Length: 177
Image (cartoon, rainbow, N blue to C red; front, side):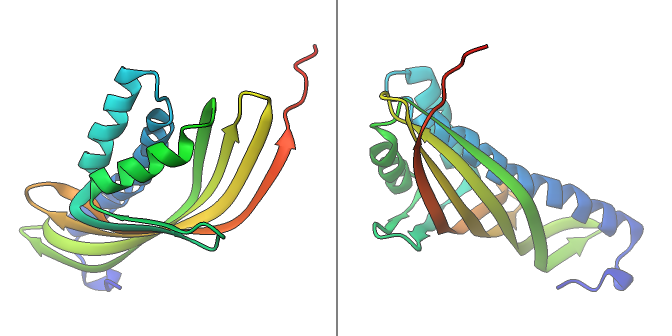
C-alpha cells in the first residue's frame, strides 16, 4: 500500500485518475461481456472482442471459482471463446458492477506522473441472464482483479478471478401496467 503522506499533490491527483481508469476497466468488461452474448449482432460482438483485447494484457489469466462448473482461460481470445460459449443460449444478459475498491500496491512516479505500477481491485457482480422462455438466471459474485500500468498500454487487467457466490433461477414477471 502506498504511504499517502509521502505523496506530492500531483501524485495524489495521478492516483485519483488511475483509480477511475482501473474501475472503468471492470465497467467496460461488463458491457463487452453483454455484447459477446449477442451472437447474431456482429457489431456488438466486434465491440466485445476489441474491448477484451483493450482491457486485458495478452497473457491475462482468467477464472471463475465457487461453482460446479469452474471456467478458466489464458489470454483475451481464450476468454472470449469461454464467454461466447457460456452465453450462447441466453436471449440477453446484463452484468451490473458495483462497490469497487482499488488498492495500489506498487506505483512508481517520475516527475509526478505514473510510469509503472500494480494494483488490485475488488468489484461486486449482479448479473441477469435471460433465456428465450422468460426464465432468468441471476448470478451474484465478486471479481478480484490484478492490474498493472505500462507506458504503452496504460492500466490493464493481468489476472481476474470471479468468485461465484450464488445463482438463482426464476421466471420473469408480466409487464402488465
